[in-house]
Image 1: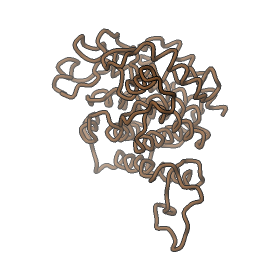
Image 2: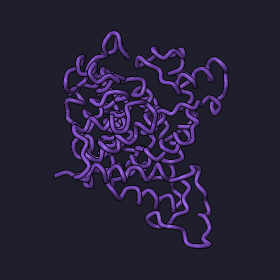
Image 3: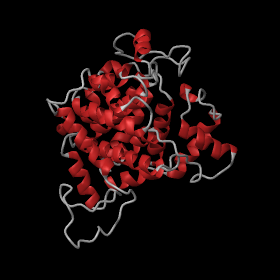
Image 4: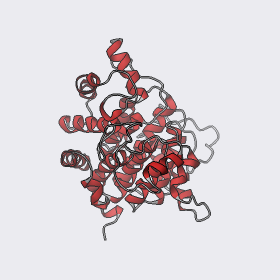
Length: 363
């Protein structure tokens, strides 16, 4: 029997990337319904497959199985990685300038994927309308838009945590400036990278992440020793103080995984995790349910992603992030074939994902 630990790095990497594309497309139709009664009235008691958006709702006019703008930007990032053999910031920015920005106009309900998110609208205004250079176009959006595309970088550099953190940080700050958002985005990437490596999303993962902080591979500040114990009297800080002011974003996954596995803590049905952590778009509502579902359904891609979708609200980000985390744990063979078959341009996506996954394994 193939298990998470016996899968190859390439299998886990491909699973993470295809899982993200699938989660994105599964939530395209029922995206952003905050009234759960309306969601159920329109899509039934349980959404189990790709659906088309309603004509009066977000992404109207798109077809079941297509990618939202988040999926398209993930693909753009992967195409840059594939062509350049790694993260080339100048190439990524050129693709945004030449291949993406000409198709949007700063209006939310417009653009590839049927909707343009806040940080992308802000970057377009500063870059196109004001003519500012890259490095000066980021805004203060507190959403997961950077995490949705930089998960490609986390997968590509899963075997090199320092390179992972550097690439995710540099790409995130191109469009988002809030320090907490950047820290949480890098932490998510670090967790995803560990799952691609072969680690488990369980109560021990934060200790492993903190060991990488102590080793200088992850740019988080910490003064504690061991298992968050008090520093020794007179002890100096580590010689390299991290970019981020605390390691808290790295400590969250273990606590949530512990809760997901604790028989005395039950969220039933699991889609109600969206009510526990919140349905809106901000990072502090999105990463936590993704960690919960990925820990609870570590070997069940379908359950994890469908519970993410059926929770309503910003279920597209929730499903995309959950799909990446669970896809990394089950590998591409652990994803139900119907989800792959139902994706638009699946053959092109499989080829792209396979190439980057192979590079990740050989890094």
